[in-house]
Image (tube, rainbow, N blue to C red):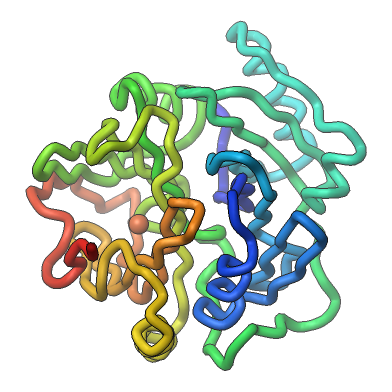
Length: 288
Ligand SMILES: [Fe+2]
């Protein structure tokens, strides 16, 4: 069992960068750096936590799962190989581009590229947000969460909970959707696995979530989205399970960015796995 401490970073292949840059910068308040056909977003002291690459189709390029030391990374490599999984060591160029000390990668369910890493590079200067916000909730909770559609949700759940230290948080079943929520630290979920519902195909990247420190950060972002007519997947609402108050910006590439405040945290010593029959307490209405 490999102890994953957090989602350290994520990379997404996107078909469009300009409006995405605007959303990350002026709606989300990230510190954005454009490097030709690449876009990097910094949200805390780390060099970056999100990378976007211009591509022909949208997909999750990789998710970076952090382990606690270089020794743990070597042990993870041996453990995965011992189980017959194919593991590759990062090249020097990959380590530099991800801004980490070391990294290995493998393919998970539905071909998702999982990167295990240690040693995120820190910036000496404070974060310079794209707009005035109180800040992002990261630290030991990690970047946020990602949601994926899986061909076999139960098999994918077993993969992440048997090879890695992901633990079951809860389930939501509604309409044609089935969602399993997994945590690896107090953040309610770092990974959510869904069936291929609502037209999603197996392996499809549905959304990533960024959490901010104030409801006013969310409210002001919502004002900007409404004023500028930026498309949304779902309007402002509050989730049943993690109780996050959030809305979902629709990117031109097809995935969504959930921007939220106030998610509950999991204490493994005192946590009951629940089953919900709706994703929202209020709001989160699907937008045309
Ligand atoms: Fe979410």
